[in-house]
Length: 242
Image 1 (tube, helix red, strand yellow):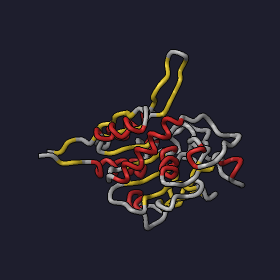
Image 2: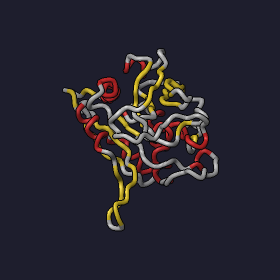
Image 3: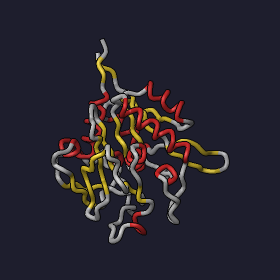
Image 4: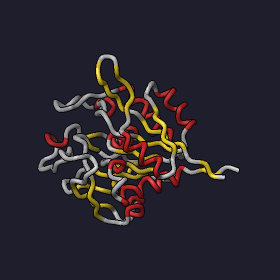
């Protein structure tokens, strides 16, 4: 019989006050996984070794959004507009991304997640789009995260196009960092009108591996194209037992 795949979602850091702080994941991730037939679990960052042990529990991995990535990891000094970073999370997620690729574990990297994927494979980041990209559009939207805010163009010969069935799509946008120099192991399959990388795919795919800069989990409940990304991801994570 079939069993529901277990999907590990990496956790961000949040501090409510001096007595309440820790791992946090927006509920849209949980809901998008569950409605498409997966069982979501939250993966706390502790260290790379324990992070890899947690992957033994998972049939698929979502690298979620959150803090900025420490520029030391791609050999740059911090920009004036660099936001808070969590180096422990960076190292744990880099280890997880590499392990997933090496062991054919389905991987969906979202927002910060696609940035971590690029850094894990030797790429760099734009630390602050507004000050570093001339004539950039608004990527940190000022409306509800469930609403779309700009267009993205998608390569027709891509897995993403196969999933969405469209060369252009409207997306939400909640970031001020983005992929800079693209890793030689990734292929750009979507961009915004100002040239910002919006989606990448692994050039050696043996299973589902996709990174997107927007937040499909927050549009999935009302947008069939966004939900289809989770449908296909969960399907790739499904296993059959006797």
